[in-house]
Image (cartoon, rainbow, N blue to C red; front, side):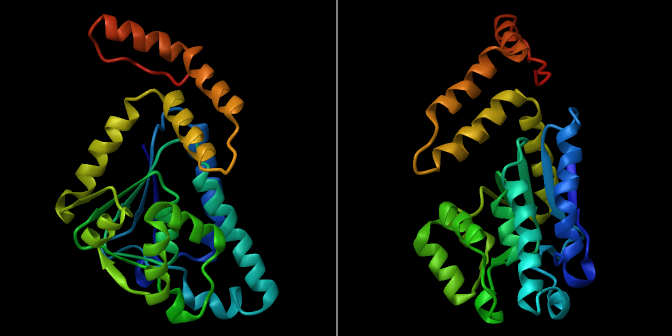
Amino acid sequence: MGWMVFDNPARRNAVSLAMWEAIPGVLEGFAADPEIRVVVLAGAGDKAFVSGADISQFDSARAGAEAVQRYEQIAERAQTRLHGFDKPTVAMIRGYCLGAGVNIANVCDLRIASTDARIGIPAAKIGLGYRASATKNLVDIVGAANAREMLITGWQYTAVQAKEMGLLHHVVAPAELESFTRKLCGDIAANAPLTMRTAKRIIAEALKPGYDAALCKSWVKECFDSADYAEGRKAFMEKRKPTFMGR
């Protein structure tokens, strides 16, 4: 299991430009390590997952048109890399998850929150534009009606309210958040990596207006041609847990 921790507790783990720049490289390291089957994203401490972008940098990093464009390109690159990452990703949310934090959580496969989480997008209260790709991800998860409410009001929601919207998969007590997440990741890590990768790729492809059926078929064929498929069949017949190697 790999851990990506947003560590800026003085600003409730607000994402700095350096953090955005670091995300793709961290993911490359996780992708290259066959021992890592699932990646968890979390915030340092117990006050926040990610409280948004680091507004203290806006006068320098997002002041002029060129600076805004550069910032958006860097953040978009990080978001795109995380969204398209082949291994399963889990957002473990404690405390505030606001703005960019919601964006980061939404490009993870699963979102687990503690009951003390507070989730919202305050872009309208600041006057910044919430990028189109992040807005589409939000709409894909919660629907257009809920996305409109979140973006127009700037309200913060409880974890239970966010789960009712479909934004969260599970809500647990704060004391159980890490143990629940580790158990979930253990279950995921025991599964066949190629099958999970194929599922992620096909789901992403199926969301496109005209998905490539032939490409999806080739991904499925990779699973059936793999040593893991042979191991899965053998383990089933022998009534034991399979040992998948990701090949």
